[in-house]
Length: 288
Image 1: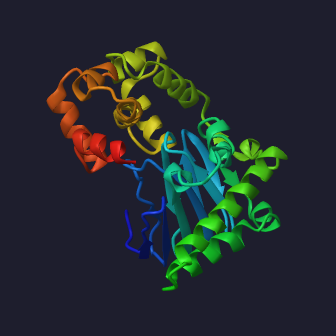
Image 2 (image 1 turned 30 degrees about the vertical axis):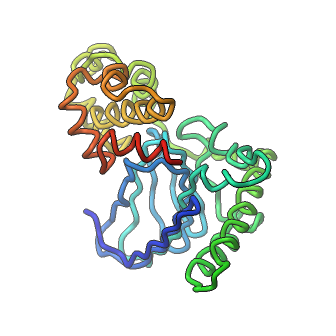
């Protein structure tokens, strides 16, 4: 069940979005999954506990923890009931750094270099040690300010945050994969899907390949990953489609290339997941 918390979105044309959410629920609540995001995402859990599934791996969430996600990762987060919940979410886009005099894209290395679902979680102890909590809290304070230079100061804080994140990864202190829970079968299914999602197949084909009942596979996949097998395939295809469109490819040809045989079906699914048409996305990315 989705619960409406008090959520404030601080949008910006500078390549970042900051949201601040707080509240309490009588039932476990699911965080909305941003299918349409093209951003790197940082979740900072100030208060409350929960669990997040990232590419089939499960991480327990405690107060003060941070979770980092890249646009290619499928995730599903649940917030525990009867506890005060508060979080800051930072969405970052590479356009943030486009006007810098030097190439600063290396600041996004912690997102680029990690494997899907691995090393997404930073414990509260690590977060405090490197001052990531203070940096995010300062960003929130600045975006609330009406000062004319607050947007520039937020970018400075973001650069500081990314620099510290790089330091954590370079010193191997982010190695949290040993604390995750992984289902071996679903891990193999995900590996197969990631290598074959552009091909023509269905859930029956996958069940036969892994010698498992189709209904059980559907149930287990949804339980472990957070979305259905078909939804996962759609996400992978749309993600690849978007990357190819950014390279100047044609829309209809690319839709077939990523696995959609019927353009009308592709158009409907794309609009549902991206909240825009393929042409609107193409025009939007050509401006950036």
